[in-house]
Length: 293
Ligand code: OGA
Ligand code: MN
Image 1 (cartoon, rainbow, N blue to C red):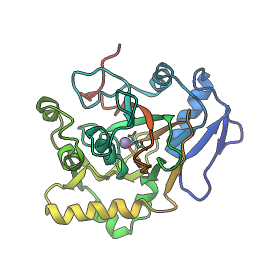
Image 2 (image 1 turned 90 degrees about the vertical axis):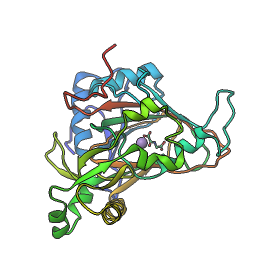
Image 3 (image 1 turned 90 degrees about the horizontal axis):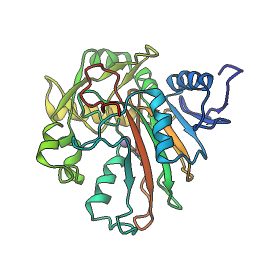
């Protein structure tokens, strides 16, 4: 890391990526800080900012420095915020059998946000509002290092390989289908993404896999499904993984194009509330971009 940065950076030991950034107020970043943050984010792929305590509006304002917002799962909603919480409208923790809780379980499997959309999400910014006393960490995996670690013949095998990513495939077992009506589901048909992605900012190659990836185009469904699972399994191993134990007020920002993430489970009877803003992939024809408001 360069010596002179307009904030303080601590690199997690023993990992290939990630950074903890302090000495910055995300409510009032200077232009110099924003430029340096973008560079650092491209290099380290996940940034954690402890103790920022942003309001919803402040989180939206900070996120907006890095791109355009992505529409969520419901076409009728223009919300820039997604609330991931097991607290019901009555303020009580919902039972683990309820759809609101079951839906969250999907996040405990390695994934890239919105890879089931034609253009996957660029960035996700997640802040902790209510944290459990134990568990509930978020963990990331560096898919650039995951690609680099592949054997040469596997790299060759994956050259030109295209995966089908599907919301129905990844969400049917834990309530994702029940969550949406027919018209929203109709916007979430299967899509295709190359298995090897070249990052537009860094030129580095990485694996683009995870739980929404169902199988490979033009290959045996079951066999290629197993291959995709093995690729993710092997890539998501030390030193390519990093978990953050949340404190209320922390914010993390990650690059869905080149990292996978998952949430760790926590006791079912404890509250956990996280708020996410999601930035859309930069494709100029991306139909998931929210109109400017
Ligand atoms: C997400 C997600 C995991 C978590 O916000 O996209 O997968 O730890 N979160 O809540
Ligand atoms: Mn996610």
